[in-house]
Image (cartoon, rainbow over all chains, first blue to last red; front, side):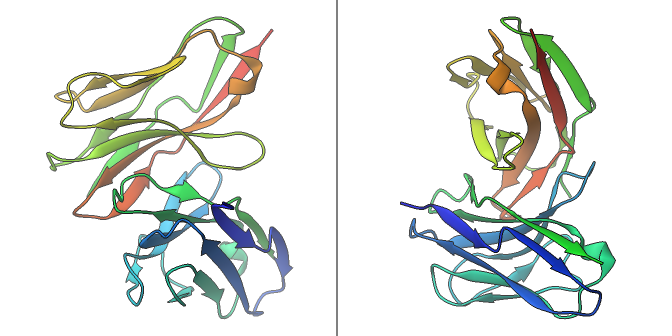
Length: 112
Length: 114
């Protein structure tokens, strides 16, 4: 099992460009999450999906959109990247127990 | 809203010694879960230990144990016989089913010296 995979691992964008971060899990988990990690601030929830077909805003959703494509995949889109979105992005998933989350390796995004 | 506070930005411990990382939280919920995650330089988030709030017994995983004080809303992590591989950022996190999300503290960077 690969667990939770994320692509790409690194990305550099110019202000105003768009991109989609991909996430997939092979653990048959119902719930999936997107976090961002900034220095001194821990991980903050951007969006989550409790099940296929549903998505909900987290703590810092502005500037992002998500799509739960199917049970395995949950993508995060930046429509018009801003320097404030420079961060490390983590995808996570959890199963029926819901409280234990498994994390992907992260994507380091730099917006110039 | 739930909050998680880690008041020690950095800690240092000598190899083979014991270190305790502090975490406090604030919630009005009675049913919740607490976690410690480790983030080494590789960036991967690794679950170290989990505690269910309804359990009075403190969780233990090999060299890692917690001191869970529910009334004080305190959840500290003790690392015994510290090893060089324990050097990492450690995050305390809180989960409740009503919010369906993890709330993280700001982390403690642990350095292990020879």
